[in-house]
Amino acid sequence: MRLQLDQIPSPLGVIRLVHDDEGALRSLDFEDFEARNLRLLRRHYGPGELFAGKAPAAVKTALADYFDGDLSALGSVRIATKGTAFQEAAWAALRAIPAGTTRSYAQQAAAIGRPKAVRAVGRANGDNPVAIVTPCHRVIGADGELTGFGGGLHRKRWLLEHEGAL
Image 1 (cartoon, rainbow, N blue to C red):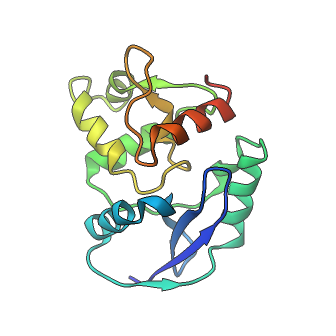
Image 2: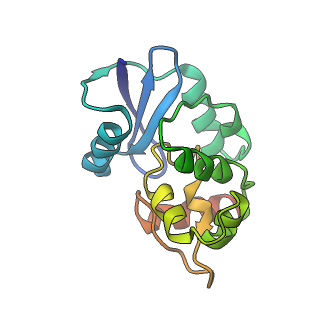
């Protein structure tokens, strides 16, 4: 598989966009988390080289529209992830959380029919390769506190405030 990397500015800093030759988004992470991004890419897609390449215009437009306030814009982004069956179920449950709302890890676990798998859901969220588009930032602690986000809690807070969830 040939993966291409583009970097774009955002209100949260430079975003790394990795896409395949068909234009599907494979990874979205932040420039200052490059090591984490590369580790997730190796874990999900195996060893390989990233090639420079322009991200699809539709992805860039959807992100720009999202940051400009159109919270539904990311629904049009075509993604292709490669995780375990459990991870894919957890990520699908993330995409079902509407903008402007949050869920607890226990609620996400229940949504995939695995109510006792709260910690496993947390790990799957941590392995989410497509931040923002697969909105792991919408999952918070049972007590309402912000917990874990691969891009840093300051970005999680910004995203939730942007969406009106805080």
